[in-house]
Image (cartoon, rainbow, N blue to C red; front, side):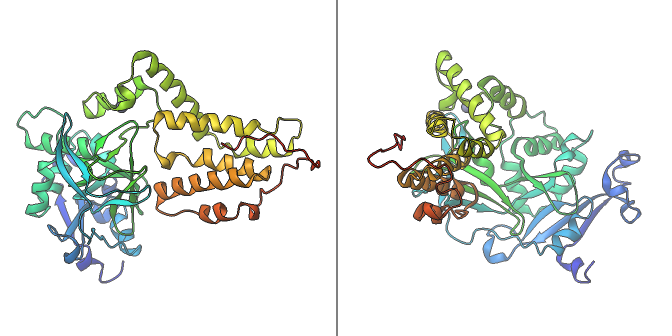
Length: 396
Ligand SMILES: [Zn+2]
């Protein structure tokens, strides 16, 4: 471990004597002898003061080698230094929500925020999660702890502080995936990001950036000034019943978003559409498109017709731009293979918007939109050139 690790990442250890139940527990920090006398290792990562108005530290319950690895990776929390592009406000029927204070194009960042607390998700499955969460919250500075305690708790309070602190974590924790140094997923809670409400047809996407140790929320569709920001708390490709069940079980509410407020007949059609789209997302369509390119016995417009139908389903389900990439990519490939410039350009632009919404970068789709003739797929499906014959290929 680098010599200057300690002052940068001070450990706060809670001794096992304070929590005697920990004997025999499988908690990984006990597996190595160095940490056998401690049950919880809390690492506090400093945030430059000028970027964080209310706190200087991000607190992380560090299992395994997480603490060392955060240092090795040069993780430096960085909160948004610019003025906020949103406000937290009361919204009808949903408690608090996030409202944008200016227009956001797909891909534009609405929130950059360092978490109040980061911890392994498995803590919540411990028999006594409060024995980890309560001391972790106890090590937050006063302002941060106040923000944590103010977050929504979707479970009824019985006046038990430990239980309430755990339920706040259960209600608000958002996955951050793996942190280096430990092979189980982590979760984080935020003061503002956790105020974003759920929709099964969301207009924003949440991602985690390890290097700046912060969450990012980006518009995944155009969000106009004054509109509310929504992300999805569940896999929104699932049918209505599954989504409602998951939301009820985990967050104790019934979703009344536009997709969930349809009549029963419309909802069934919506389920079918989401089911079809789900299959596309789960299987890479590239293989089918490539097989079609080289099989001249198949109809020329097979892929285009099929994927335009999927595109129509996407529009009807109001799914976010971030989820369009497979469909847009297949259409660019098909139009390019058929040498249809207009169609290839149109869908490369959609792929660019989708990439921007998903990751903030265009992944080269801008170049494809400018000159689809330069891609590897151009003209791969060789339609015979017959003077005076125009091939009937849909370009809408
Ligand atoms: Zn819904």
